[in-house]
Amino acid sequence: MKILVVDDDLELLGLIGFALRQAGYLVIEASDGPGALDTFAREQPDMAILDVNLPGLSGFEVCRRIRAESAAPIMMLTVRNSEEDQVHGLDNGADDYLTKPFSPRTLLARVRALLRRAEIDRPSPLHAGALALDVERQSVSVRGAAPIRLTSLEFRLLQYLLANAGHTISTERLTSHVWGYRGVGDKQLLKQLVHRLRQKIEQNPAEPEYVVTVPGIGYLLQT
Image (cartoon, rainbow, N blue to C red; front, top):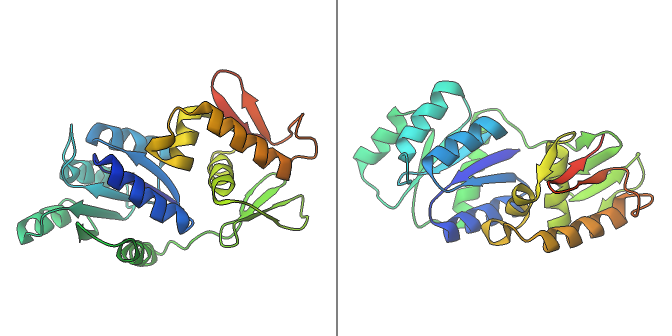
């Protein structure tokens, strides 16, 4: 389950992303209106969470443009609680409205409700080739063998690679997904995490069969 989160408050963006990832969702992020539209078009998420006040394009306009192309559930976030804003958001195609500040539990409950309403269930194991990732148990099975437990960071990395199996993913996109904006650009952290993941899933980590390095770009999950 892939969710796009858009907010120009990077601290809040990181907190929302962390809460969703801990709940097992795959999170992609953007911090302005144009970036939100580009990311949505590229990633095709199952749901979007949009702040109202965004640089470049307002959350209302981003919502309107997404709704013109997709039926994915959209939740709007705002610091205001006026009826006018709520009506504006709903008129532009939003499915729900959440006023800041809010607790992670409230956010997750509303997300689950929206996805249920859209008849989207959380996935059974995510498969790619010989790998099967169990989202609920945070484990991976290789060629049908016994499940291997993953740490939260290993799980997020493998989840994103599996969701994009067969495609090269840049270092920046991977670090952003695993650590949020605070991890963007830290290639050494990612390199160490890939090494730990290979130790668990590769028959010969020195000559990886699944998680392959693409020099100068990032990594690819071979199927």
